[in-house]
Image (tube, rainbow, N blue to C red):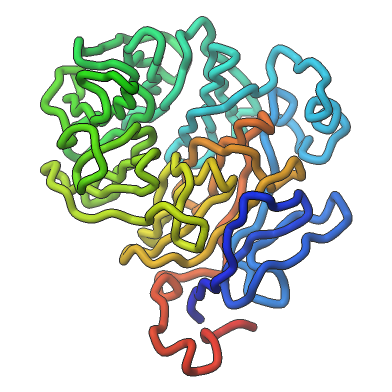
Length: 370
Protein backbone atom coordinates (compact mmCIF):
# COMPACT_ATOMS: atom_id res chain seq x y z
CA UNK A 1 0.00 0.00 0.00
CA UNK A 2 1.65 3.19 -1.20
CA UNK A 3 0.68 6.84 -1.23
CA UNK A 4 0.31 8.10 -4.78
CA UNK A 5 -0.36 11.71 -5.77
CA UNK A 6 -2.28 12.35 -8.98
CA UNK A 7 -1.97 15.42 -11.13
CA UNK A 8 -5.01 17.34 -9.98
CA UNK A 9 -4.06 21.00 -9.55
CA UNK A 10 -4.65 22.67 -6.15
CA UNK A 11 -6.71 25.46 -7.68
CA UNK A 12 -7.36 28.51 -5.51
CA UNK A 13 -11.03 28.85 -6.55
CA UNK A 14 -12.21 25.72 -4.77
CA UNK A 15 -15.73 25.80 -3.40
CA UNK A 16 -16.54 24.81 0.17
CA UNK A 17 -18.01 21.53 -1.03
CA UNK A 18 -15.00 20.30 -2.97
CA UNK A 19 -12.30 18.07 -1.51
CA UNK A 20 -8.72 18.45 -2.64
CA UNK A 21 -7.46 14.98 -1.64
CA UNK A 22 -4.71 13.71 -3.91
CA UNK A 23 -3.85 10.07 -3.69
CA UNK A 24 -4.70 7.28 -6.10
CA UNK A 25 -7.56 9.33 -7.57
CA UNK A 26 -8.51 12.82 -8.67
CA UNK A 27 -10.62 15.43 -6.90
CA UNK A 28 -13.95 14.39 -5.40
CA UNK A 29 -17.13 16.10 -4.34
CA UNK A 30 -17.74 16.48 -0.62
CA UNK A 31 -20.87 14.98 0.97
CA UNK A 32 -23.76 17.42 1.09
CA UNK A 33 -24.73 16.70 4.69
CA UNK A 34 -23.01 19.17 6.99
CA UNK A 35 -22.44 16.65 9.78
CA UNK A 36 -20.50 14.24 7.55
CA UNK A 37 -16.84 14.78 8.41
CA UNK A 38 -14.40 15.04 5.55
CA UNK A 39 -11.73 12.52 4.58
CA UNK A 40 -8.86 12.56 2.08
CA UNK A 41 -8.73 11.01 -0.42
CA UNK A 42 -12.43 10.49 -1.03
CA UNK A 43 -13.92 6.97 -0.91
CA UNK A 44 -13.47 4.35 -2.23
CA UNK A 45 -9.75 5.07 -1.93
CA UNK A 46 -7.89 4.33 1.29
CA UNK A 47 -8.42 7.16 3.75
CA UNK A 48 -5.20 8.80 4.97
CA UNK A 49 -6.47 12.02 6.58
CA UNK A 50 -9.68 12.32 8.60
CA UNK A 51 -11.11 15.60 9.80
CA UNK A 52 -11.80 15.16 13.51
CA UNK A 53 -13.16 18.44 14.84
CA UNK A 54 -12.51 22.16 15.25
CA UNK A 55 -11.56 24.12 18.36
CA UNK A 56 -13.24 27.51 18.46
CA UNK A 57 -13.19 28.59 22.10
CA UNK A 58 -13.56 27.80 25.79
CA UNK A 59 -16.75 25.82 25.23
CA UNK A 60 -14.79 23.14 23.36
CA UNK A 61 -13.11 21.96 26.56
CA UNK A 62 -16.25 20.08 27.57
CA UNK A 63 -17.88 19.31 24.23
CA UNK A 64 -17.40 19.34 20.48
CA UNK A 65 -19.03 22.46 19.04
CA UNK A 66 -17.70 21.96 15.51
CA UNK A 67 -21.14 21.94 13.88
CA UNK A 68 -22.97 24.13 16.41
CA UNK A 69 -25.11 27.15 15.63
CA UNK A 70 -22.65 29.31 17.58
CA UNK A 71 -19.96 28.59 14.99
CA UNK A 72 -22.36 29.27 12.14
CA UNK A 73 -23.37 32.57 13.73
CA UNK A 74 -19.76 33.66 14.16
CA UNK A 75 -18.82 32.82 10.59
CA UNK A 76 -21.87 34.84 9.52
CA UNK A 77 -20.53 37.95 11.24
CA UNK A 78 -21.88 37.79 14.80
CA UNK A 79 -19.50 39.44 17.29
CA UNK A 80 -17.29 36.78 18.91
CA UNK A 81 -17.48 36.06 22.65
CA UNK A 82 -14.42 37.01 24.75
CA UNK A 83 -12.90 33.52 24.92
CA UNK A 84 -13.21 32.60 21.28
CA UNK A 85 -10.27 32.13 18.93
CA UNK A 86 -9.72 35.06 16.57
CA UNK A 87 -6.95 35.12 13.94
CA UNK A 88 -4.83 32.19 15.16
CA UNK A 89 -1.22 32.40 13.98
CA UNK A 90 0.73 30.15 16.36
CA UNK A 91 0.25 26.60 17.68
CA UNK A 92 1.95 24.22 20.08
CA UNK A 93 0.84 20.86 21.49
CA UNK A 94 2.11 19.07 24.59
CA UNK A 95 4.13 15.86 24.30
CA UNK A 96 1.19 13.81 25.57
CA UNK A 97 -1.20 15.48 23.13
CA UNK A 98 -3.52 16.67 25.89
CA UNK A 99 -2.84 20.42 25.87
CA UNK A 100 -3.05 22.75 22.89
CA UNK A 101 -1.76 26.32 22.89
CA UNK A 102 -3.10 28.88 20.39
CA UNK A 103 -1.65 32.34 19.69
CA UNK A 104 -4.46 34.78 18.93
CA UNK A 105 -2.96 37.72 17.06
CA UNK A 106 -6.20 39.74 17.25
CA UNK A 107 -6.90 38.93 20.91
CA UNK A 108 -3.34 39.76 22.06
CA UNK A 109 -3.49 36.51 24.00
CA UNK A 110 -2.51 32.86 24.03
CA UNK A 111 -5.29 30.37 24.79
CA UNK A 112 -4.43 27.08 26.50
CA UNK A 113 -6.84 24.15 26.10
CA UNK A 114 -6.22 21.37 28.63
CA UNK A 115 -8.50 18.59 27.43
CA UNK A 116 -7.35 16.04 30.02
CA UNK A 117 -7.93 18.43 32.90
CA UNK A 118 -10.98 20.05 31.24
CA UNK A 119 -9.46 23.45 31.86
CA UNK A 120 -9.22 26.60 29.76
CA UNK A 121 -6.70 29.34 30.60
CA UNK A 122 -5.26 32.32 28.78
CA UNK A 123 -2.22 34.56 28.86
CA UNK A 124 -3.41 38.08 28.12
CA UNK A 125 -1.80 41.43 27.38
CA UNK A 126 0.74 40.10 24.89
CA UNK A 127 2.17 42.33 22.17
CA UNK A 128 0.99 40.62 18.98
CA UNK A 129 1.71 37.00 19.91
CA UNK A 130 2.87 34.96 16.95
CA UNK A 131 5.01 31.80 17.02
CA UNK A 132 4.79 29.30 19.89
CA UNK A 133 7.11 26.52 21.06
CA UNK A 134 7.45 24.23 24.09
CA UNK A 135 10.60 23.03 25.83
CA UNK A 136 11.00 19.68 27.61
CA UNK A 137 9.42 21.07 30.81
CA UNK A 138 6.47 22.38 28.76
CA UNK A 139 7.47 25.96 29.34
CA UNK A 140 5.82 28.03 26.62
CA UNK A 141 7.92 30.33 24.41
CA UNK A 142 5.87 33.11 22.83
CA UNK A 143 7.12 35.42 20.08
CA UNK A 144 5.76 38.89 20.88
CA UNK A 145 6.17 40.48 17.51
CA UNK A 146 5.41 44.08 18.49
CA UNK A 147 8.05 43.96 21.25
CA UNK A 148 10.55 42.00 19.13
CA UNK A 149 10.84 39.74 22.16
CA UNK A 150 10.45 36.08 23.09
CA UNK A 151 8.66 35.62 26.42
CA UNK A 152 8.71 32.39 28.41
CA UNK A 153 5.84 31.14 30.62
CA UNK A 154 5.43 28.06 32.80
CA UNK A 155 2.47 25.67 32.53
CA UNK A 156 0.44 27.82 34.89
CA UNK A 157 0.92 30.88 32.70
CA UNK A 158 3.41 32.59 35.01
CA UNK A 159 6.04 34.60 33.18
CA UNK A 160 9.53 33.29 33.80
CA UNK A 161 11.69 35.54 31.64
CA UNK A 162 12.09 37.11 28.22
CA UNK A 163 14.93 37.66 25.78
CA UNK A 164 15.68 39.45 22.53
CA UNK A 165 18.54 40.80 20.44
CA UNK A 166 19.02 44.21 18.77
CA UNK A 167 19.20 42.48 15.39
CA UNK A 168 15.62 41.14 15.63
CA UNK A 169 13.39 43.17 13.31
CA UNK A 170 10.16 41.24 12.82
CA UNK A 171 10.18 37.88 14.63
CA UNK A 172 7.49 35.39 13.62
CA UNK A 173 8.00 31.63 13.89
CA UNK A 174 9.95 29.78 16.56
CA UNK A 175 11.25 26.23 17.03
CA UNK A 176 13.29 24.57 19.78
CA UNK A 177 15.93 21.87 19.32
CA UNK A 178 15.73 20.32 22.78
CA UNK A 179 18.59 17.88 22.19
CA UNK A 180 21.11 20.52 21.17
CA UNK A 181 19.75 23.34 23.32
CA UNK A 182 18.96 25.79 20.55
CA UNK A 183 16.10 28.18 19.90
CA UNK A 184 15.44 29.19 16.31
CA UNK A 185 13.49 32.37 15.56
CA UNK A 186 12.40 33.39 12.07
CA UNK A 187 13.09 37.07 11.42
CA UNK A 188 10.71 37.88 8.58
CA UNK A 189 12.00 41.41 8.20
CA UNK A 190 10.53 43.92 5.75
CA UNK A 191 11.05 45.40 2.32
CA UNK A 192 13.88 47.66 3.56
CA UNK A 193 15.31 45.40 6.22
CA UNK A 194 18.91 45.31 7.42
CA UNK A 195 18.94 42.19 9.60
CA UNK A 196 15.70 40.44 8.60
CA UNK A 197 15.09 37.70 6.03
CA UNK A 198 17.04 35.37 8.27
CA UNK A 199 16.81 32.91 11.15
CA UNK A 200 18.33 33.87 14.49
CA UNK A 201 19.81 31.06 16.60
CA UNK A 202 19.78 31.46 20.40
CA UNK A 203 20.98 29.27 23.24
CA UNK A 204 18.49 28.23 25.94
CA UNK A 205 19.48 31.26 28.04
CA UNK A 206 18.47 33.59 25.22
CA UNK A 207 21.94 34.48 24.01
CA UNK A 208 22.37 34.93 20.26
CA UNK A 209 24.68 32.26 18.80
CA UNK A 210 24.53 33.06 15.10
CA UNK A 211 22.34 34.06 12.20
CA UNK A 212 21.30 31.69 9.41
CA UNK A 213 20.73 32.88 5.89
CA UNK A 214 22.84 34.29 3.09
CA UNK A 215 20.84 37.49 2.86
CA UNK A 216 17.68 38.52 1.06
CA UNK A 217 17.22 36.72 -2.24
CA UNK A 218 16.12 33.56 -4.00
CA UNK A 219 19.38 31.60 -4.21
CA UNK A 220 19.78 28.47 -2.06
CA UNK A 221 20.35 29.57 1.53
CA UNK A 222 18.83 33.01 0.95
CA UNK A 223 15.38 34.00 2.22
CA UNK A 224 12.50 36.21 1.18
CA UNK A 225 10.18 36.80 4.15
CA UNK A 226 10.69 33.53 6.07
CA UNK A 227 7.90 32.82 8.55
CA UNK A 228 7.49 29.42 10.25
CA UNK A 229 10.04 26.86 11.46
CA UNK A 230 10.36 23.28 12.67
CA UNK A 231 13.15 20.95 13.77
CA UNK A 232 13.24 17.18 13.16
CA UNK A 233 14.73 14.48 15.37
CA UNK A 234 18.14 14.77 13.62
CA UNK A 235 18.31 18.50 14.28
CA UNK A 236 17.52 19.52 10.71
CA UNK A 237 15.80 22.89 10.51
CA UNK A 238 12.84 23.44 8.15
CA UNK A 239 12.20 27.06 7.17
CA UNK A 240 9.06 28.23 5.38
CA UNK A 241 10.62 30.65 2.88
CA UNK A 242 7.24 32.18 2.20
CA UNK A 243 7.70 34.63 -0.66
CA UNK A 244 10.18 32.31 -2.36
CA UNK A 245 7.38 29.68 -2.32
CA UNK A 246 9.53 26.90 -0.88
CA UNK A 247 10.67 25.23 2.32
CA UNK A 248 14.43 25.22 2.87
CA UNK A 249 16.17 22.60 4.99
CA UNK A 250 19.40 23.15 6.95
CA UNK A 251 21.37 20.63 8.97
CA UNK A 252 22.14 20.98 12.68
CA UNK A 253 25.27 23.00 11.84
CA UNK A 254 23.32 25.50 9.78
CA UNK A 255 24.46 24.20 6.38
CA UNK A 256 21.97 24.27 3.52
CA UNK A 257 20.69 20.78 2.61
CA UNK A 258 17.83 21.11 0.13
CA UNK A 259 14.58 22.84 -0.82
CA UNK A 260 11.09 21.40 -0.98
CA UNK A 261 8.58 22.78 -3.47
CA UNK A 262 8.56 25.73 -5.84
CA UNK A 263 6.16 28.40 -7.03
CA UNK A 264 3.22 27.14 -9.07
CA UNK A 265 -0.31 25.77 -8.99
CA UNK A 266 0.34 22.05 -9.51
CA UNK A 267 0.84 19.35 -6.91
CA UNK A 268 4.08 19.78 -4.98
CA UNK A 269 4.10 23.53 -5.69
CA UNK A 270 3.25 26.47 -3.44
CA UNK A 271 1.77 29.94 -3.41
CA UNK A 272 2.54 31.14 0.13
CA UNK A 273 3.88 28.32 2.32
CA UNK A 274 3.73 28.98 6.05
CA UNK A 275 3.46 26.43 8.85
CA UNK A 276 5.64 23.32 8.62
CA UNK A 277 5.52 20.16 10.75
CA UNK A 278 6.60 16.51 10.70
CA UNK A 279 4.71 13.33 11.56
CA UNK A 280 6.17 10.28 13.30
CA UNK A 281 7.26 8.81 9.94
CA UNK A 282 9.31 11.86 8.98
CA UNK A 283 6.80 13.11 6.42
CA UNK A 284 6.77 16.90 6.04
CA UNK A 285 3.47 18.81 6.21
CA UNK A 286 3.42 22.31 4.73
CA UNK A 287 0.56 24.76 5.12
CA UNK A 288 -0.09 26.83 2.02
CA UNK A 289 -1.94 29.98 2.98
CA UNK A 290 -2.54 30.94 -0.64
CA UNK A 291 -4.10 27.63 -1.67
CA UNK A 292 -5.71 27.11 1.77
CA UNK A 293 -4.52 23.53 2.06
CA UNK A 294 -1.79 21.35 3.55
CA UNK A 295 0.59 19.39 1.34
CA UNK A 296 2.40 16.28 2.58
CA UNK A 297 5.86 15.29 1.35
CA UNK A 298 7.82 12.16 2.20
CA UNK A 299 11.38 12.41 3.60
CA UNK A 300 12.72 12.44 0.02
CA UNK A 301 10.67 15.52 -0.80
CA UNK A 302 8.15 13.69 -3.01
CA UNK A 303 4.57 14.95 -2.67
CA UNK A 304 2.14 12.36 -1.31
CA UNK A 305 -1.15 14.11 -0.72
CA UNK A 306 -2.79 17.41 0.03
CA UNK A 307 -5.87 18.00 2.11
CA UNK A 308 -8.16 20.88 2.90
CA UNK A 309 -9.26 23.52 0.43
CA UNK A 310 -10.78 26.95 0.65
CA UNK A 311 -14.15 27.31 2.38
CA UNK A 312 -15.99 27.79 5.70
CA UNK A 313 -17.22 24.20 6.05
CA UNK A 314 -15.59 22.46 9.05
CA UNK A 315 -12.45 20.75 7.78
CA UNK A 316 -11.92 23.27 4.98
CA UNK A 317 -9.72 26.35 5.51
CA UNK A 318 -9.30 30.03 4.74
CA UNK A 319 -5.71 31.29 4.70
CA UNK A 320 -4.33 28.82 7.26
CA UNK A 321 -1.11 29.72 9.06
CA UNK A 322 0.50 27.47 11.69
CA UNK A 323 0.54 23.68 12.00
CA UNK A 324 1.67 21.26 14.68
CA UNK A 325 1.48 17.45 15.01
CA UNK A 326 1.42 15.46 18.24
CA UNK A 327 3.18 12.09 18.79
CA UNK A 328 -0.04 10.25 17.86
CA UNK A 329 -0.08 11.93 14.43
CA UNK A 330 -2.99 14.17 15.27
CA UNK A 331 -2.66 17.29 13.14
CA UNK A 332 -3.62 20.81 14.26
CA UNK A 333 -3.97 23.62 11.71
CA UNK A 334 -4.59 27.29 12.55
CA UNK A 335 -7.47 28.30 10.27
CA UNK A 336 -6.87 32.06 10.24
CA UNK A 337 -9.88 33.64 8.53
CA UNK A 338 -12.30 30.99 9.84
CA UNK A 339 -11.05 31.83 13.37
CA UNK A 340 -10.57 28.27 14.57
CA UNK A 341 -8.12 25.41 14.88
CA UNK A 342 -8.93 22.39 12.70
CA UNK A 343 -7.90 18.95 13.93
CA UNK A 344 -7.18 16.04 11.60
CA UNK A 345 -5.87 12.50 12.11
CA UNK A 346 -3.42 10.52 9.99
CA UNK A 347 -4.84 6.99 9.61
CA UNK A 348 -4.23 3.72 7.74
CA UNK A 349 -0.58 4.61 7.25
CA UNK A 350 2.76 2.97 8.04
CA UNK A 351 6.33 4.07 7.42
CA UNK A 352 6.44 2.00 4.23
CA UNK A 353 3.51 3.95 2.80
CA UNK A 354 5.63 7.10 2.60
CA UNK A 355 7.67 5.86 -0.33
CA UNK A 356 6.25 6.06 -3.84
CA UNK A 357 6.63 3.09 -6.17
CA UNK A 358 8.33 4.54 -9.29
CA UNK A 359 6.71 1.79 -11.41
CA UNK A 360 3.20 2.47 -10.10
CA UNK A 361 2.06 4.19 -13.30
CA UNK A 362 3.15 1.23 -15.46
CA UNK A 363 1.36 -1.19 -13.10
CA UNK A 364 -1.96 0.51 -13.60
CA UNK A 365 -1.87 2.51 -10.37
CA UNK A 366 -0.42 2.36 -6.89
CA UNK A 367 -0.89 -0.68 -4.73
CA UNK A 368 -3.35 -1.13 -1.91
CA UNK A 369 -6.19 1.14 -3.01
CA UNK A 370 -8.79 -0.96 -1.29
